[in-house]
Length: 585
Image 1 (cartoon, one colour):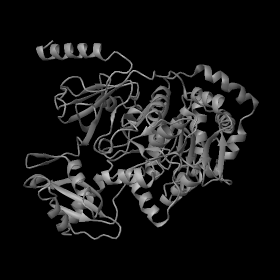
Image 2: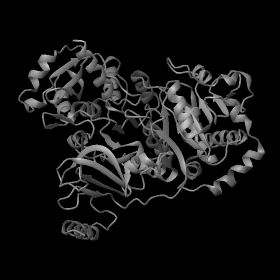
Image 3: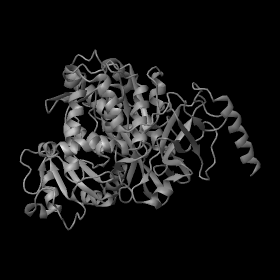
Image 4: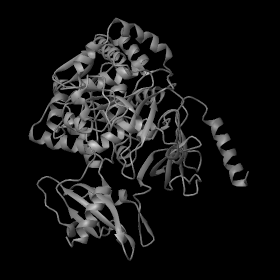
C-alpha cells in the first residue's frame, strides 16, 4: 500500500470513529470530498406489497390516490382491493414471478394499479417513456423480453394502439393473450386502457375481472416468495449516447429511497402530494407514489400530462400541501398564476429536481405559491433516484446554489480523472455507494461494469462539496467545454445568463471549432413580453465571466427542446446549431 493510501485509510478510520453516532454530521471528511449520510432512520427491509399493506392497515379510509382528470378517488382500502384484482388478472394471463410487463401510458389510475399489481405478483414493471415511437418501443420490449404490455389507447398526438398494431399486426387474427408476433417474439398479451380495445387485446377492465378465486388464493403464497432484494422495476435511461440501458431496481432500492425523500419534506398522513411529473420516471413513481404511500399521504394527479393551469386548479381544489416539479414547471405555474390567481394557502412543501433552480424562481415559489419549505433533490435513475436533498429549513441560497446534503445510508466521493478523491471545493466526478445503487443494467454486464466499480456508481456528473457537505452540481463530465485548452463549465455561464432580467431560461453547450477545438454556444428563451438580442446578452456577460466563457454564438428561441420530464436536450440543440451554422444561418 502506498504512503498516500495508508494516510487516506488512517484518516478514514479516524473519521469513522468520530461519525459512528446516529446523528453524525454529513460534513466531508477533513479536507477531502468524501461524505457519509446519517445512519438514522434505519433502512427498511421490506417489499413494495409490504409497504402498501402497512399503509392500508394504518390509514385505510383515508384518500390514497386522486386522479382529477379521470374523476377517480380511492381510499387505501379501495386501492388495496383494486391492486389485488389487477394482480389476480396478471396471474390469469399466465405471468409468473420474474416475468416482465411493460407499461406505456401517461399519468392514469391504471398506471398506479399496474405498478402495485406487478409488485404483488413478483412481476418486473418495465417503464416505457410515453414519448417513445414504434422503433423505441420495439427495442424496449425486446431488450427485456416483456411478456405483457399495458398501454393507454392514445395520448396527445401519440396513437399507442396504432403503433402497437404496426409492430404486431398479428393481433388482428389472434385471441387476447395468445399473441405470437414476428417483431415482438416474447410478447403474449396486450392490455389497452380502452372500453373497446380491438382485436387481440384485453381492455384494462377485462384484466381486472380476469382473475378468480384461484388467483386470489395464490397471492398470499407469492408474498412468501418475495424478497426485498428481488429486481422489481426496469427503467430505461435516456439513450442520448447509444441505445437506452435498462436500469434494474429492487424493492429495497426504491422503497427506502421513497421513505428518505419524503422524510426530508416532513411528509405525514395529513399531507396531500400533487404529482404532475410523469409516472414512468423515478420522480413520479418512486419519490411520488411510493413516497406518499410510505407516509400514508394522499397522491393527487392533476392530469395525464403537465398543464400549469390544470395543476394549479388541482392544488387549490384538493387543498394540496406539497407538489413536485422541475423548475420549468414551476416557472409555468408562476406565469399562469399571474393571469388567474388561486388560493394556495394549503401548500407548504414540495420538491424541485431535474435541473438547477434560479434564485428568483425559488423566491417566487416561496412567496407566491406559499411553498416556504420546498426542497431541492438530486439523483439519477441508477441510484433509485435521490442521493442529495436539501432540508426544509435550509437557506434559500443553499437550496438554489446546491442540491443539499447526502441522504441517509449513502457514501459519496468526488474523484479526479485518475480516481483519487479531490480536496473539498475541487471539482470532479460524483460517485455514490450504498443501498440505492441499482442491481445493474438489464443483460448488459459490460456497461454495468463501466458504471459500477467496487460498488461505486459513477454518475458522470461534475460536482464539488463545501466544508459543510453541501453539494453543487457543476455540469456533466461529457458536457464540459474545452475551448483552446480552457475548461468551461456550462452551468456557470447559464447561471450568469439566467440572472438577466429579460431571460427566462438559458442553455449553454459546446460546438466543434477548427481552431479552438470547441467554442461556446447558448440558446436563450426570453421572459414573456420581453425582447432581447444576442448582442445585448453578450455585452451583459462581459465583466461577469472571463472573456473565453462568453458564448460566441447566441440564439434567442421560442422554446427549448426538452425531454418529457422537463430536462433540456443539449444534444438536440448542439446538432441543430451545427446545421444552422453550416447553412450560414
